[in-house]
Amino acid sequence: MQYGTIPGVERPVSRILFGTATPILFNAFRSVYGEAPDFPQRLNAAFDLLDTMYALGINAFDCADHYGEEPLGEWLEARGLHDKCVILTKGAHHNRWRKRVTDFDILYDCHNSLAKLKTSHIQLYLLHRDDPQVPVGPIMETLNRLHAEGKIGVFGASNWTMERMMEANEYAYKHGLVPFTVSSPNFGLANQLDDPWGGGCVTISGPQNRTVRAWYRDNHIPIMAYSALGRGFFSGAFRHDQPEKAAALLDQAARKGYDYPENYERLRRCEILAQEMGVSVSQIAMAWIFNQPGLEVYALSGATSKAHMQANIDAADIRLTPRQCEWLDLEQENC
Image 1 (tube, rainbow, N blue to C red):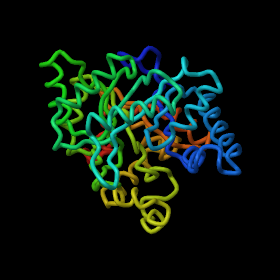
Image 2 (image 1 turned 60 degrees about the horizontal axis):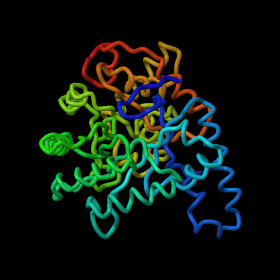
Image 3 (image 1 turned 135 degrees about the horizontal axis):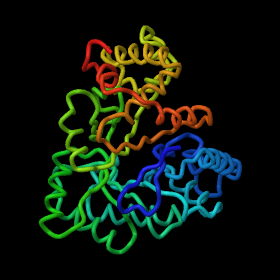
Image 4 (image 1 turned 180 degrees about the horizontal axis):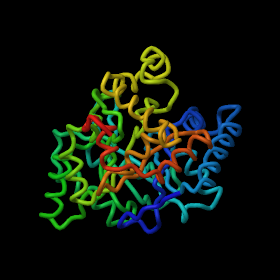
């Protein structure tokens, strides 16, 4: 396992974060705590999965105020691992009635997250969505209040555009506040050509976002990349010439976000390079994000199979040349 250093986080952070938005963890707390007859079995299954990931060297876990926090908090307390692991959680997600990027919602979600995670401090705290109609000032003031109180450490945004992050940080610098220093956009070899879920998903993938990635590089902003494998597009479960099989296997969000001809060409090129290097298609796609010059990338992975997660971990050690990376991303005709 490779580890990175994020300024403001007191311990090394595994390059692969286990994403807790998986059925095993999600279903553990679907019903009211303790009421489901099979609740102990559900919780044990969640613990077993988290034990497996931790044994692989993963010490960082991705969750949010509406998924993963309850079983993760129970597990961290039961195993005595709060001082050995890094928590990344998110708040201020919109709901069906309204957008929720307000001082009230940020405070509400953060305090609930602290309780569910059974901790007094969250190492990495992100705003899950943005509302461009809300001024950045009150947002940064609220996050700085939580930071000053020791409830959150490093903070930033998920699904915020570069422009809004720049605006927020300019406000912070002008008012002597702590700025955003971490971000979680969609980032991977599969170019996200439509918003998978709606509600303002933001990607920095694809040649069209080269300038955005340069901003991340120049400002040394760590990238916590979600959907790094295109929600299964690069799983290896289908080939580039099997779009019908892909449509049957991919979920609706993956089809909406990634099921396009240009990504099948990327998949074809992954297949060629994987065969040449003796690795899997998914490992080539995962290696691609770790071989972007100057970018500090961490991958959020929800793989629940020990073998699949180990393959992701091993992919971080695969070296690709800049030309190979450009070829995979359709920026070069020849490898």
